[in-house]
Amino acid sequence: MDGSVLAAVVAVLGLLVACVAMIPDWAGLISSDPDPVASSDRPGLSTTATSAPAAGGSTLPSMTATSTPAEPAPAATSDFLPPEQLDRFKIPGGHDYAKVDFDSHPPRTWVDVFRSSGMDLEYSTFGLKIGDKVLMGSGPAKRPASPEECLSAAQTQSLGTEINHQDIESGMVLCVSTTKDNVAWLKLLRTRTRSGGGKPDLEFTVVVWHRR
Image (cartoon, rainbow, N blue to C red; front, side):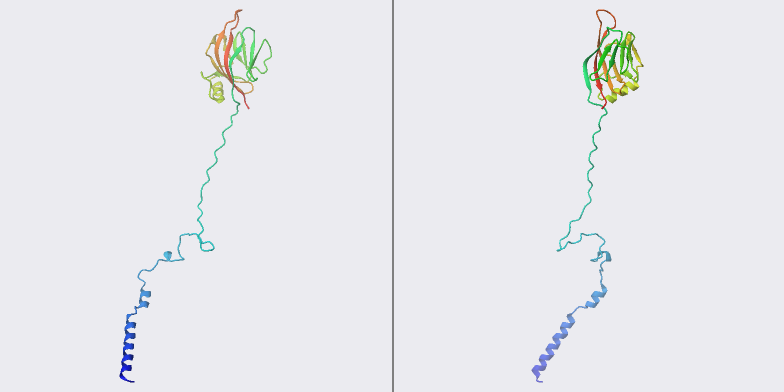
């Protein structure tokens, strides 16, 4: 081998040695692992739930639980029909007896009849008397907002079974629970003296709530 070829071989060997010296110690780097990844942070070991990818690689949207607003409760239905009002209701005084039935449509009176079936009030020389199963109490000066208010007055503000004749005065207000459990509010507007004498006529404003 001539000198030029030998020199070339030596140069190539020197270059190879230099390249090998520049290669880092990969084994050392792998074994030392100065910043290991925690098992919970390693890919595939995460404890956080994620959406599963759908076919084709897209991510399915997450499903969030939502509460459905409760439907409002239906309005309570009253036990009573809308009220029936009579601005002028007269109980005549020119007879021995005048009887009142608030359960009729409209309320009515009849006179000088002995029967008391269905009678709520009886007007005689003695005063105003209630019928069987009827309650009568002192009522509010203004028309009650509800039949329940007047019914409560009849039950708790009792006037007994009869109002004496001398206690019947204009402005008197009554709440009555009738023989059929209807409710009546009465306000005495005036008493009218009759030309022939005897008991005066009684003129009321009357409101009646009939049950359904």
